[in-house]
Amino acid sequence: MESLDDVGIEYEDGTFLGEQAKSVTGKENPISDRAVDFWKTFSNWINAAIKNELPPSTSKYIIYISQPKEGEIAEMFSKAASIDEAKKVLGVVKQEIWGNAPDYEKRESVSSSLSE
Figure 1 (cartoon, rainbow, N blue to C red):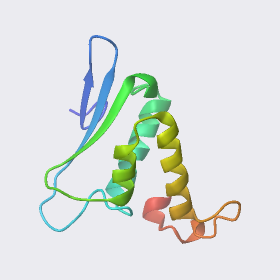
Figure 2 (figure 1 turned 45 degrees about the vertical axis):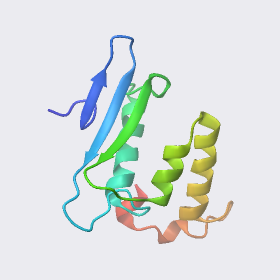
Figure 3 (figure 1 turned 135 degrees about the vertical axis):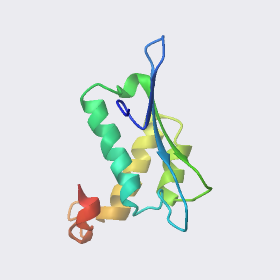
């Protein structure tokens, strides 16, 4: 039964591992930049962090995919090796999806399935 995540592990040292497992049977890509499953994973992790179920300071968040797939945003997050690098990726993603601050001209065009 899912509790913390698809696969949730709590280690004896108090660290947590939250894993999302994505099964791919065809041409779908669950880590493409606009994939609903991709962004739902982040939403789930954010909610778990807010509830302190997967505290960011002691947790690792991993997406496993049953077949090789690529996603530019997923790759950028995967390569981020520090909090500062992850924050830079967030800035790039925000600009890519919403547009430029302060107007965020693309924000209104984000599909309702992704906007949450």
